[in-house]
Image 1 (cartoon, one colour):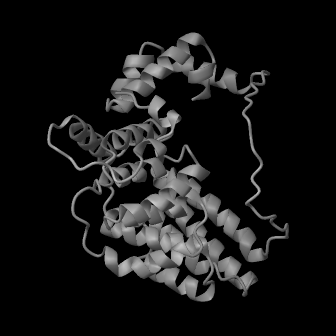
Image 2 (cartoon, helix red, strand yellow):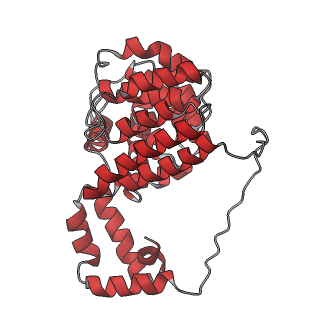
Length: 320
């Protein structure tokens, strides 16, 4: 990405074309062909190797205001179990892109969990990491392992774990609301059953992902004012959080901010296009908001100040 965006004016122009094509819904292969298709792969490979070994240093400066609401964390030595947990986390990342080698890596992960348990009997992380494996690789994990059940066992031993509380809520949401569902319309059945777990997460939530997950839940329950509180806090902590923008768009749509919902959804798509794949649900939401924006049907006035929710940066990225 840095090579394509920064190495020359020509490549920078081509890179912007690539992003624009992807953001408009063009397939990856077609978008690449329209922007870099005339450049041989061998040339790009050679340039990439040279670019990595260049002696230049690019300095980017941005103002930073020191946060005063974050406490000082103590520095301590990791326990034996925690050291194995770091390695387990890296193995999970490796397994995500390993293809045919995934099964061997998953066996290695289970081996590391067993070693950590034997060498550090006080370590309680086995259930958490087995749940992480099930969540990341549902088709490859042992059938007897259940992510939700494992996380509940772990929380019985470590009741204050924000990561486990987040995992528990996220796992249930994914089971109730498939990725391809837009989240618009009637609330899906089953959301009310997990409200207690969501409220447990509320008590410890502080990160953008935790706050966004709570906000998404209340949006699905069609309680947009409750959701708005958590999603605005998440966006304040990380203005470029694509999932936060994606969840905030249907929330403010429920509150009557139709124009702003389309702006935020487009902004979310633009951000994700630079680092991953845009889901069909995101594109469907954007199309829904745009149709509503041009509809001549009478609508109720917004119940909040829409302008206060959308930042100038969000509006600048609304490529219509």
